[in-house]
Length: 592
Image (cartoon, rainbow, N blue to C red; front, top):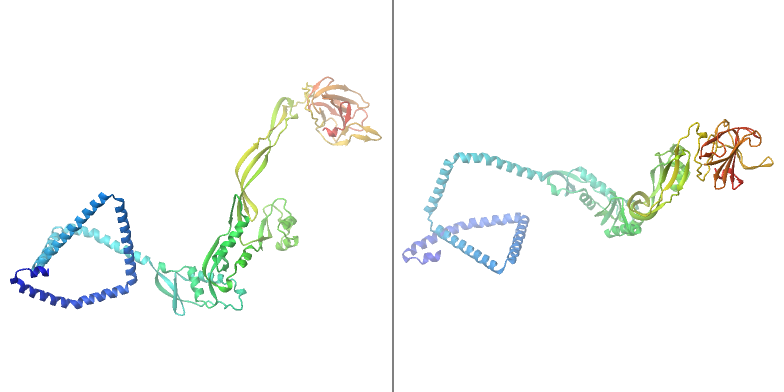
């Protein structure tokens, strides 16, 4: 600008020199104000230095991210496209720069009067626009004003939402931490007490822990400034007087067990316990919730790795309730829990043990446990038998008391895969995963008669079929009054079946066959008959009061053939029953 002024006609040089001097005078007058402005900026920067640095870092980060994207974009372009974009960008920048220079030149040519006229013109145009569009502006204001009010309200709510009233804990006048309410301090104090678990075993060299009493002050704090009970616990211990150390506490189901200096010690011991029960196709885990917390602990409550291993592996005895099952006895329950009967009685004092021996009753027992419960899920392969089914085949020609095994049953075999859950070695759940049948079972087939007997069916012609097995000949009773063998100096070749009220009761054929002979009389066997069942087997029925069949007649198994009496050489109503195999009399009890 100054060069252009000097290059103009020499006539105007003096006037421009005068103007230049006036401008210098104005600049000198503005200098103190400019210095004051710089000082204010410096104070502002010092006051908000941390925030300024944060904002500057954020801006730099975003700018670098933008550059990375731009470079990535340019790299993906081919050479011709990139050069074309470069040329266009260069032309755009040069054009914008030239336009800016022309604008500056135009503004420089403006006189004071021109600026005033321009300002007045803008004001007049604004007034005219407002006058012409008064209704539109009013309507717009009616819409915009409530929206702005809502925006201000929401921003106010957001601000106060992030602000909270809390308590500031102070020890000896020094503010330590901010909390939501006294409940947080109580929880923190409880955590402190848990960390003092080993205070009874404090060494002589250890300084006992004494926790100071805090003071509270109500203050406005931000939500992010509020501390959790764990943080407050560390602050309390930090302000306490005594020996404290950085350590890691082991918590089981929320209860502090012990603290160690190295967190790896806890991991090693827990892995050892799991590895002791691990194996192929085994899932193993702890049933309890295990947590570790790093923080400040009294030196007296910190244990070594070996001591922690002993704490976790040492069993302890606790009282439990046992649900009585069917068949349980007091001595059996005591033995299963390694207790004496007296210990079981003392534990359940006031109640007779015999009164508790009913299903689903509860009885107190002493159970040996460890701090950690192992839950083990195992895949078990094993073979098991498949029981056979009994299939009944109905025969319409045989009576309902006819039963004959026509096909023997055979058990099958299968290979099973089960997923079994064990808790401390005791099975609690079993789930079948896969079943592979190795051998199918063979069903047992039994032929049964369906023909019903009537009162007069004793004279009916039977089938004469033999089942190969003998049934009891007197359905009324199975009481034997005299067995097979020596009796009264002679040999008794059969068995005598008798009971009160047996006289007149039906006698049935022990098996199907043909009646060999029927003899009537009142001597010897009295009224008696013989049935041939084939395969050399015969049966004889003696001392009958009446006989309902005749020689040569075919009878079925279970068919009524006579009634019990006392004919012949008899001491009272009974049936003398004999079994003859290949013409030799056998003990009937071996066949029926």
